[in-house]
Length: 367
Image (cartoon, rainbow, N blue to C red; front, side):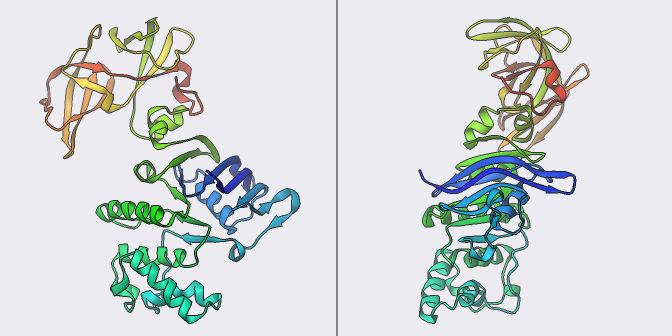
């Protein structure tokens, strides 16, 4: 796979604050690549540097083999000379123009012949399922349709890459889900690589070929959605992507296949051995809610807890359990109903182990 965007040691400061801290990543040809992280982590600043809307302080950015920014060469190619298409959170469609005129606008700026404009705009509107809406004004469109207009305007110039910054955040939940599918379909159909920015972990998992998880201006991990979720590199990735329970534990025994832990007032848990086991007896056990089982003892385990709250979420049930001073969050299949107030056995299918000292350390490596 070739590389469309190459970012090397990119650094951007605002006064004394380092918003982006010497990060490296590459977006492959035809790849859907997402930058995900909490607000203020540096993901939008990174995108704006790639777009040329912000000037970085250090590093290099290449698009399709052409260097568009290099601090060492004092090179900073203007945005309009970078072969990119952009879609932002607020759509920025022109209210006085029709759908057709909005989509055609970049071609008019470049003095593309009228016949070529009609051909390219027609093709884009057909791809977006909007060929019958060309004469409508944005005020006559739904939020999802306005988002498609913005996407069409970005696509019509046949860019080398699409840059999308939180483009679905203004849509309601149902429409967001629909547009996730549409964006993925369009990206597969056109083959144009996408650099996508979002704080929504579900969006990133559902749409991306690879994800870069950011925090405090740094990248913690770059991997496929499955690897990010199943094999988080750091405690921050484990915390941010999905939900997790943390249980202080004492390592009793570890062999090639299993580990035995003493947790929560002396209860015993036996679970499959993770990739590695931290040094020392005091560890932190991290368990995803869906990796815990209710009312079903796992051999060697004797953890009990009380069901304090049950929430039916349609496709699953979520429980809040109490064991001493600790709350546990457990998710089960929707037909595995356990009454509130019940005392249950809790099993663990698998978990992650960290040194106990990692409790407050987001950079701690996950075993």
